[in-house]
Amino acid sequence: MTKKYIKITRHNEKKLKRGLTPFSVWAMAFGCIVGWGAFLMPGDIFLKQAGPLGSMFAIEIGAFIMLIISYCYYYMLHRFPEVGAQFMYAKKAFGKLHGFICAWFLGFCYISIIPLNATALQTLLRTIADNLLQFGFHYNFRGYDVYLGEILLAITALIVFALISSLNIRRVGQIQVALVLIQLCVVLVMVVGSIMNPGHVLHENLGPLFHPGKDLSIFLQMFSVIAVAPWAFVGFEIVPQLSHESNFSMEGAKVIMDTCILCSAFFYIVLTLMAALAIPVGYSTWVEYIYGLPYLRGMASVPTAFAAHRLMGGIGSVLWSVASLSAAFSCIIGFYIATSRLLYNMAKDAMIPSWFGKLTRHGVPVNATIFCMLFSMIPPFFGRSTLTWAVEMSAIGGAIGFGYTSLAARKYAREEGRMDIEIFGTLGFIFSIFFAMLLLIPFPKLNCSIGQESWLLLVLWTVMGIIFFLRTQVSAPPEDGEKPHLEGAYPQKVL
Image (cartoon, rainbow, N blue to C red; front, side, top):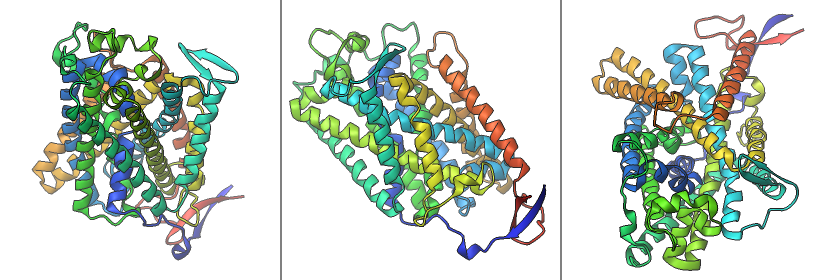
């Protein structure tokens, strides 16, 4: 078997097509950040870890850290506007192996969130319609009953949104904008309703401000929430990745990223405070309510849903359902786009098989989208247990991506004498290491390290990445500086 180089006619090569407006890029990023988890995590993680005030401070700190890291992305996008894919920043700064590591774990981060939002439909229907889809065979996995009807619903949603994500990118952007506007408007109505109807949501319910039952200081409680910041804010960094499908300016990219971070932080804080303010009859504090959630059914089993119902009755329940559905749908679309473009760019750079780089006539990475869909069909068979796994895996992948970009920005800023960027890059890298340590090291008392299942998934993904990387090196095109047999050629295997 020998290698032969074949010249490629660039004018006939399919490329990603521009079609996203700056606002649709913003909607893509915001949809990735604020998904179904924003409506579920106040009761499942935030209040349990740090209470309402501790969660609010932790979210604000997390947003501030992300603003620092976003400045590194802005600098790298400004320095390498032709690159687009953020893993290329790591590759240019530290070599192909580091570029692959960054891309591979970012891929894990992105793709793990897709099934999380697909399985959200199960929880949503259990909340508003109890056992509507609980038919067919069922089994119990880690205390959660999994039903055939709910599995089919999640798989159907994954297929439908894979088809939507395969449309012309301009049309996909328009759909994303509509979904994001719906959830923003509905949550705004809920906030106004809580202000105008203070009797329905008792402000004295906000106490205790921190979690009284944890043997942790206030700062350690906040650390437990800050640890998931890479998951909570992952998505703003897809803006550079979408630069080849939009026409935003460099300055516009910074505005898009920063406003996404700030708006999503406000979103998380509002939903968390609402979850603490409205508690059912029979519970004296939000602490009792949160720990009683496993024994409740219907709207009361999801604090944000109960708060909406308490505010506006049946209308509030409908509005909450619309907002949470829009959030889940926009997050699925956003990460279908983000993951497929990441895989496409990896294939284009010969990091993974070229099969992932196939484009349709609309400039859509069709095979990469199909892979995302098929991979995402596995978690629904494990029920709600995948929620924690997805949060932990996306937090680790996000921390790795943030760390590499911050370190790359620091390297180039030092060469250019840009002290401001060097400081931001150093801080971004330190924060990323901090996130990773909180997740990977089981610190005493802190309940924020990943579980056994997440460790298993992390090991499996790492092994699969090693196999992919070693395999692609055999037939990879020459790196910059190596001269192929023909100018502009790529190596192919021929018998």
